[in-house]
Length: 184
Figure 1 (tube, rainbow, N blue to C red):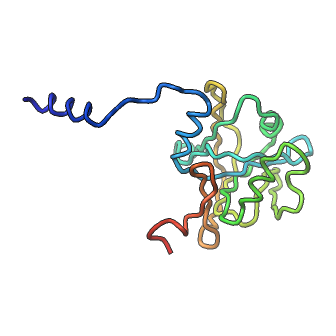
Figure 2 (spheres, one colour):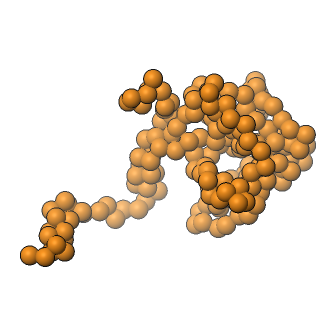
Figure 3 (cartoon, rainbow, N blue to C red):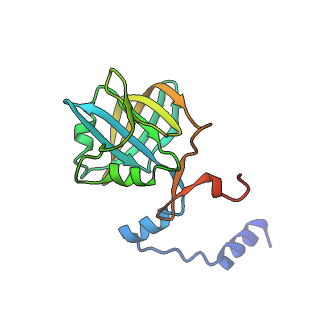
């Protein structure tokens, strides 16, 4: 028996019956197994504070130029307004931001009511207590099915991770990194 035949036999023995139901519910459940950071994106656009929350945020897309990305639903009512901001502040949410995350994701009311925020002269808005701030502008947008991939160019950073641990979104719940096995 060749190595290839052995590998094929082992693969068949592992039970690779994949679920071919790719409904939104099945995919959300499957994708929830991958932990992701949670970012608030906020800025002043046309004189109003705008903000949204993204668990699809990705760092290190490019170092030259410095690019990060996130995906936004095509049905978002906030993104068309927020992308008009001269600068967009990204706050990597800290472990105490669970309620802040829900507030910023809300479709009603003042998303910034009672929040400790800071802003730049260019209009980027940052949340106090975040693990990291990134000052960005829209670099490009790419269609991606029912979402749009947005590339943002980074113009400045401020690391607060010594004071604030980030939260992650995993299996449809917010979790902090301190409770992960092996961490103190």
